[in-house]
Length: 73
Image (cartoon, rainbow, N blue to C red; front, top):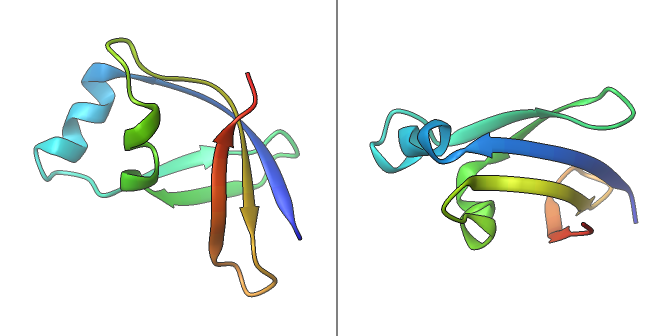
């Protein structure tokens, strides 16, 4: 199954745009320099007071559908 490693650093203020309805996707870059447009609701379980911080692994199907997103560190 294909996967990407993402280092995510979004402040709580940056994520606020999602709650205010001004954004519903987050544009990220993987460690191998690929761009990923991720629906923001997938990051909500990882949101803390400081925002979303850490290293994550995104697993997806051959046709590009998200299968899982979990924190590595």
